[in-house]
Length: 333
Ligand code: TYM
Picture 1: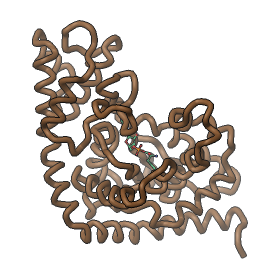
Picture 2 (picture 1 turned 180 degrees about the vertical axis):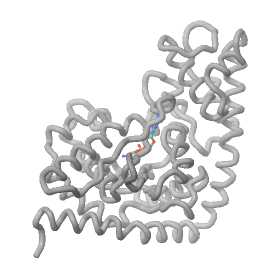
Picture 3 (picture 1 turned 60 degrees about the vertical axis):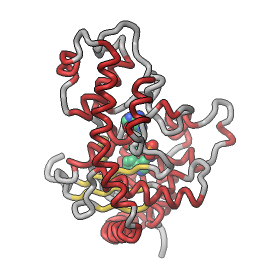
Picture 4 (picture 1 turned 135 degrees about the vertical axis):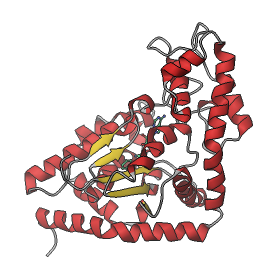
């Protein structure tokens, strides 16, 4: 990426449970990157959350809970800006400008929209859900982001942001930096514990699908014990072993050991022993995060201060990009 300023932008919806898929696929990658970029911006994307129904009181609480989770996982407000999307009006204004440079056809190709709507009932979903990738493009492009660390399910959206940026640059002259998704292959798609053919998801029907970041030891043991395995009894990853591959990748990420080393460690030992060790590894890894979370969430005034400082710091960047784009488009007086 040459000598260009490195700007990282990423975000998570404050829509309740955060699980180890969000942690391994996104937040865990964010932490070391804070020291590798010139500007790191982490957003709590509440406007994305309302693309599906939300309880207003819960949403408000979840905004602070998500912020506390960022900090508990290692995002340092001294190094990074943390802010709430709806506190910066530039995001919605930019969305309109980008809407007018994107086609219904390209948004119709977004697989997440297809996944989130019931087939045949697309007409009943909100325009917000359809337009969600444009709001995400606004988030990314407003800050001239270069690095966007996300899980695999967001890759298509980052590519759309890049395409729209390129289109606008071609039409009006250089305005936007082109963003790149940053995706760690082994945890790009952490799969459901109850169904390793589908990604781990907070909207999955069963609580056995995921381990929440605030799950206690008993729940973690129960969910790992019940996790689906493949036929056979060997602790081995491979294309014909989707369940074990997923569990081994999770083990590897939490323990720092390579998948091969873990396979060697459990050679000839069977699923039971592997699973109880995996549960322990997850319990021990989440313990310090849970402890820090309790500390951080108990100081609501402190959290709000962090969010206000974050939004003030990044406001001039968003404001400048928006002003430049409006000028190029020929808007206003
Ligand atoms: P969201 O809130 O659905 O998910 C947050 C992050 O977690 C990742 N993720 C996963 N990674 C691996 N395995 C899984 N099973 C898994 N489930 C979720 C997601 O890929 C994501 O990185 N629209 C986005 C948030 C957003 C955003 C942005 C991200 C809004 N604006 C700008 C980056 C840049 C979303 O709804 O993510």
